[in-house]
Image (cartoon, rainbow, N blue to C red):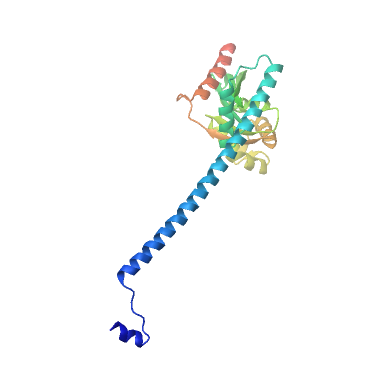
Length: 238
């Protein structure tokens, strides 16, 4: 039958065994190609990871050198370990923020004696600040905590500002641009504490600020520190 088909010009179907052999050969070749490609990708990833580590270490070393120079000039600067500076650098590069600023405000009576506090973290070095007014409001203290912390920055920075004040966070992230367009007015009337908001607006032109809200008095370490700083100022006015 096969001879008859060949004589008629009809190709005989390949037997199953030959198909299997050819399929296995192609499968082995495909697997080999994939394996070589995977090895090339892996080596490229290793080279990129090594380059990234070298860049990170270079930036961290520069941060450490900058902190050491500051420490020689300012004897009051707190001592910070090399490791903590490097950890802060890695975190900064991962998040995109140069500076972390934690703030809080407090008031006894609202209006009444009030205080503000902040913790400023730059390249692993933390600085605290506090102040207050004898007669004020809680919202004013929240704004002043952020303003005074931002004023401590010596150069334009990308700032992660963390506060438990919805007034401050929403004002920076959502409300302020609309207030400016309307001539510093809300739908209900003039913006309260307008001079403080205008100062924050001026600081926004210098720094890139991303405000984040955290719930207060739930054990957030930096928020609790800021609260203690603010309350300590209130106690001085009593």
